[in-house]
Image 1 (tube, rainbow, N blue to C red):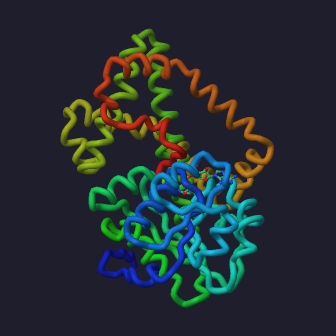
Image 2 (image 1 turned 90 degrees about the vertical axis):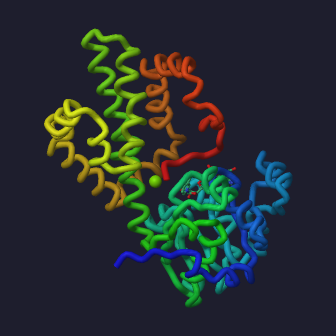
Length: 344
Ligand code: NAD
Ligand code: MG
């Protein structure tokens, strides 16, 4: 059932014949616009004309228009604006220019999956979601590779939505790595679940609980930081390269026995039951409704929780220890200096 697409499956000429608008010039936007521009496609970038990104995009040789003008000109419109901003920009600047036969593309399914944006019936709606941050979409392309992506078609008005989306993925470099067929629902629900339960929420809560337990028991914060945060990367790298079994092969037998017998005492059936509840909140739209409301009232809870996170002692000790390990971030642009950011 699983379908993967590669370069041989794509028909670049389908996109070559189209005018493409990239809306936004953030993490994903700059990478999409520059990769397509390098490939010789007819690209324009849609931005607020007062945006600080306008001179950056122009300096990179791109043509910049207002979002409305870019949408009016283009046949293919890729929406790379923040998910929480997409609906009102769609209503005011995109929808009025969606004439029959145009193709509306997304890089994440949130606004379609949760019915925030309802495109007209005579327009193609599809998704190309790169499974990597925007700066890697650009960097791997320049190196001759690509970041894998997901492709999904929500609505095929022209009969060519899928082929056109695949041609877009190809222009982005994604068919060099592999493009997996999915649906807007699967992409949106698994993406939200992964970041909440494992990648961001689960892992940060686990690290902090471990750190607090050691410090409260009287151990040095430095020991707790090295043990519960710094070493995590080394273990995750092994899992990434060789799976869980490969990681277990590399650690000592003592570590492996502790892993096998204690891991299930930390992640108990209750924890998994909570994961199922979180998944249900994603599927039934209650997480989306909560996040949309939070944005409408100016993000008070988000700010408060984020500030509390910054004040946690693990941040102070971490900053001090990392300053003594410059090799940790040597040659890498600080993530806080790259616009946007996501887990994909
Ligand atoms: P971003 O925040 O980095 O960039 C958003 C862009 O939109 C910027 O150019 C910004 O100036 C512009 N913008 C912001 N508010 C605006 C407004 N009110 N009006 C007009 N323009 C506005 O966003 P991003 O992380 O690139 O995300 C874009 C899309 O890509 C989202 O759907 C996201 O889910 C998806 N996505 C992101 C990543 C990632 O690595 N960041 C990965 C996969 C998918
Ligand atoms: Mg993700």
